[in-house]
Image 1 (cartoon, rainbow, N blue to C red):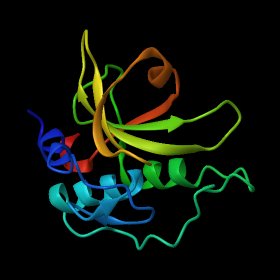
Image 2: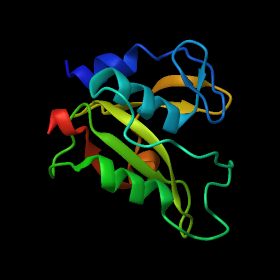
Image 3: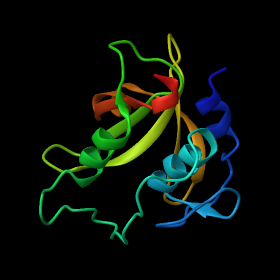
Length: 142
């Protein structure tokens, strides 16, 4: 099992808490990836400024995608466990949801923090897969 997937599974059950990143206490989808970064890579490279739930929608800026492109590496062509998935939740909106691919193949799944559910492992169904706009790997995993 990938180190990233093992770390992500350690967050399952953490409650959803906007702007948080503390395993067992609270996190959002960005906080989950930040927490895994700290476990896999070490200290976070940049401070994360406060952000609202609409995550740059008024400006249309791809803030999350730009940050991921600066700090993570583009993933290979094939889906592989441990990849960071970036989702666009609706057409024309900015990409603002993250998850970790936990299983590829015939029954793909991903781990993510979801409002109302907390950190869960969900099937990567076709509706979710169609929303993926980018895939990345952590620097030490590339």
